[in-house]
Structure formats: structure tokens, C-alpha cells
Length: 421
Image (cartoon, rainbow, N blue to C red; front, side, top):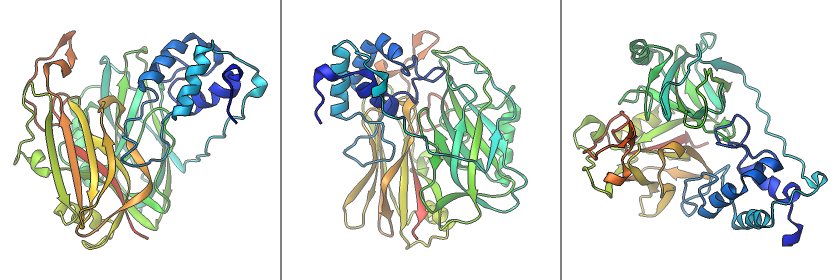
């Protein structure tokens, strides 16, 4: 049924759209700068809402829809955008609360156990504070287990901007414990990763405001071995909210076995990391391109996937994908190039924003087999106009290369690969 303009109301027409796409961040105590939970709140900020609808900055959803389709897409259809514009232009009519549709029940999540940061941490840096915390895996789990779902429970929802959870095996935990011991206060400062340039900590999951519980694709899971520790990177955004102590918790569902063991696999040119081929981004250059073509036969793919019981000639399913750059990144793309030359796009981001990175679950997996390759492309803007502000002044452009620091750069893809059933 086509709704006439004169019939539009908050309760029947606008509220369902706002609840689905906006309220996950814009709620009291949320990361959004204002709440959109009630008619009065929306009416008071309606011109800001309309402006963000017009320029399509909200809801924040970076993947190019022509690349692929993903679960839980935060995309307003043109019909929804037009409806909200018309409703605002008509004066934000509230209407009758009896016309409201029943709110959908959230998917139930009952964790098998929860883990919590050892002690509270109060952010100290403005506008962003990146901090890593070590959390031991339960000692009661004396056999390898598979994480099949993960939930994040921020202690301060208005400060926690995103969370990435890594896992370090028992023999690697000392590397991160040393970083923690060397930094006063809870945890240690980190940016863009767990604080090391190698891969001694494996990606386990992530969270951003408004995101659903992280669930592994059906039948899959990520192995965690006895004696491991979580390395949890928390991005605190302190620009709009008072700094308060945070003690974030995590809920996990686990299984003793899964049909398709899976793992997050980094996609990059290791010569950049080792300095064998510098990933140089010249000072002042507004359009720098670095790329890597990585065959399925690459030693790292073979080694990592062999941990899942996958032979070098076997196909795997690619279920999730992510890109990672720092603040000079401008756009990026990750794809599978089949042996016959056809290309399947995994993720394309045309307007990179470090503060809105994430990983994205494909609606349908893409096969990655013998003879195929991963294609990774990253572009950077190192012009004077695209430099960060430091102590109130814009930083001068400098030549930048690969590194883990705030003003270094990276070009990294991340995929979740699982053994085929």
C-alpha cells in the first residue's frame, strides 16, 4: 500500500525505520551524540537527521553495495529515505501510539561463560584512546574448544566505539604480557592491532555499536587452545562523553567440535612487514596505490589453512571479509580472482574511515581453491589537507611506511575461511 504524505506519522511510519537502522547507536548512554528513542528526541534533532539522510552519512555503512551482499546491512532504501524526508518536512507528526508495530524480539543469546577485564580503565586521551587488555582463557577448559558465538557487553556504552578480540596461544602470551607490564595502568596503548607487527595473536571476533552478536557461520567455529589469553583492543571515543571507568565483559558460546573448523586469515604482502619491499607513501601525494596478488599456493595460506585440516589443493569457503588501513587510507578493495580469470568481489570501500571499520558476513560464501588468488588494493591520501590534528595544529605531511604506530600505515585484508563440509 502506498502511504499518502498526509498520513505519515512517527509511530506508524518513521519509528520502525529509526529503530531498525539508528537506535542501536543513538540511545541514552550510547555512542551516538544524541538519542533517537522517542518522538520528542527525534523531533528536536529532525534537521540533523534530515541532513544525514540527504548526504547518506548515516547510518554508517561503508561497503559498496555493487561489490557483494552482507548480513545485517545498515542501508536505508531510497523508499525509507524518502519517507523520513517527507515525514520531517511535514512537521514530524507524532500520530497515535496505538499505530506502532510490535518491536521485534532480539535474538536470544545465552553465553556458556563470560569473561571480564581484570580491572576498570578510565580513558585518558582525547578524542580517541586505543587500549589493549589481556584476559586469560578459563583454566577449566583443558581441551581445545571452538568459539561459535561472542557477545560484547561494554561497561561504558557511550565511550566504547569498537572492540576487536584477538587470541594468543599459551606460548605467545608472554609477548603481550611484556607490553602490559611496560605500560603503567591497566592494559597498554595499542593502535591498529594488538600491539605487535607479527601475527602471534589471531583475530577472534569484533563488535561495533548496534552490531548483533558475533556468530560464526553455521557449522563453523574458531579454535582456542588451553592456556591461551585474549588480547582485547578497545577504541574509546572521548569526544562527546565524559571519561568514566570502563570494565567491558565478553560472553562466549563454545563447542567441543564443529563440522567446519574456521579461522580469520590475514591477507597482505609480508615483504611490507619485513621491510623487503617498502610500502612507501610519499609526503604530499594525494593518491598512492599499493596492491598485492596472493595465490592460494602462498606459503602463509597453505600453513594457516593446514591448521584447519585443509590440504593445499582443497577449496575453502570465504564467509567474512574486512579491510584495515590507518588514517591516511582513502579506499580499498579485496577480491578472489579465480584461476580462469573471473573475479568475485569480497569487499570494496570507496570512502575509508578508520573510525568505521568492521568485518562483514557474506550472505553466500565464496570458494577459494587451488589456482585462485586474493587481490588486495589500498589507496592513500597523504596530502596536506588529509593530515591529523595534533595539539590543535594540522600535522605536516611526511613519508609514511608500514608500521603499527598511529602515524604509520597498513594495507591488510582479513577473511574468515572455513573448511568445506
